[in-house]
Length: 159
Image (cartoon, rainbow, N blue to C red; front, side, top):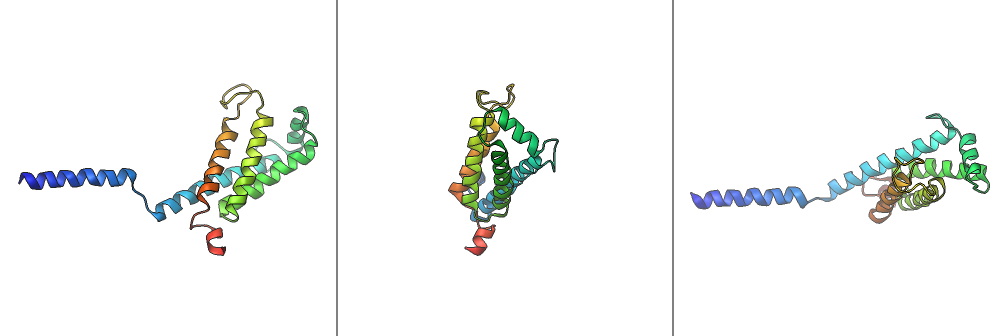
């Protein structure tokens, strides 16, 4: 009787270990899909915000802000940022050319953090806002560079 109890207890502990540390390919692919779609859509929304489609901003206002920061060719830079967010974010969400899209978005976030949040520190709650958001987005995109698109992606279907 005691041996049966100890065996049950041992199985329960082992089951908890499995719950805490195990995974499988499907769960990993679902996690990558969820992350890609969420972050990709986030980038697309920010790009659309620069066009004035969502939020209160527009491309002219973004370009003028870049001019005030001393960015050379601010109108061109504003368009490049907007296009990299919309195109790169769409590619990331769909899982098409995932790694190149993630590299493009990393570069975009490093530039945004370095120029747009210069001297503001890390925390986004600082005044002016720090580079916390851009750094974290760049890191998440680096995770996609390392992991790849997963099996639930257009990359997997095409290549």
